[in-house]
Length: 121
Image (cartoon, rainbow, N blue to C red; front, top):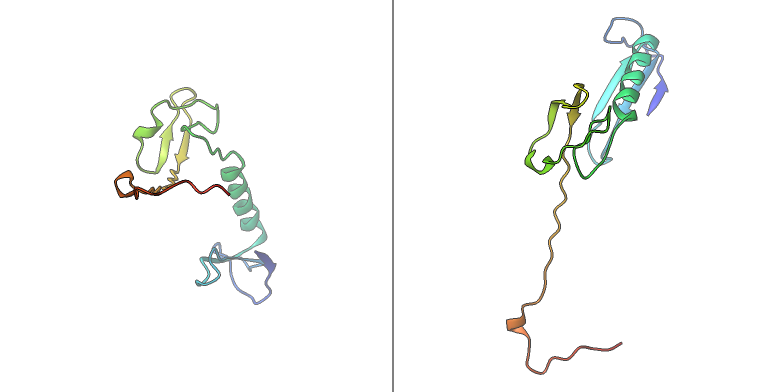
């Protein structure tokens, strides 16, 4: 969320704030991020956010966001890493690993009653 703020607050650089950003990822919790920006710092902040996320890749394998090279041993990486280096192009990038756990349950054959039959609807 971005809105104009004329309360006289200051940006981190010391200039008068013209913009305030508040981010709240969970409406049941307090604000996660609240910061005042002058126009110059806000433009830099917006540029950095756009740069970081413009080339975000969500793939089954680790994939370089610059050249598209894939790691064939992605499964070996267990932790996020802010300083990955591509073997192909040599550029640095950040790796974030998301895991999905699915629990599957079934009835045991050993517990099946002798007279059980499939119900046809």
